[in-house]
Image (cartoon, rainbow, N blue to C red; front, side, top):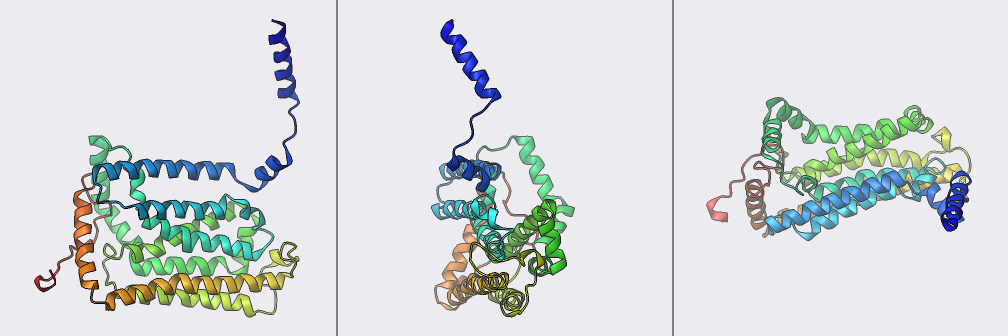
Length: 328
């Protein structure tokens, strides 16, 4: 009884007068976002469970590289919004640029490559849920809206306008001056990244020729190059919120802006043009005919083997791939 009383008093004293956190724990609490980290870990666990379930049902449908791509996309997303990098966002334009590049050009394509529909494949839905999803996907208004949102022209314009508009000084100041608008800015960059990479990764369901992908990617580099060149060679600081000197870089605000512009210029050029060159080489190679035949068979097979009874991609303008007899 005496021991219980002493422990009770100690617990009450620690509850009313908690001990201060250790310096290491305090730094982690200030730099890492626990809600974002927990949410992304939960998404990773749900996806892993769905991936394992899909592999057990259809071993040939999903390979290991999809798992690696999806987890890599979540890691890039965490670095941008959950790691210590976010604490420097308001101090350095270069860090701000790195975050947006990670979200739009790294996390978005990796998540799409990882087949995010596996998040729903951990447990097959019940009959009424499955039928409800099928009816919703096949509902004509949903198909029309999906057709507009996933059209290559709309995806290109959405991504380009998002980048250009948010870098207008007045709009940029709005995003930096309010936490709510800052979240809106991040969400718009992430959504624009998903829309931009959709026709590149799912080019068959986008209803256009594969030859259009290199042109699509090349045209996307032009507005980014113009913006990055302006930030790099401008003689004055464009954004008033970054006029103070950058202590982390031990450089002026103008040098920080030049670093951000050069970073965007080089990164976007490589991320957009390297896939364009690779796709062009593949299409010019003799083995591309076999690849197209294999992709067509895989598309129809994945539609038949979907655990929900319908193709996992929306059914609007999803033409059946017909391979001529001389190529078979």
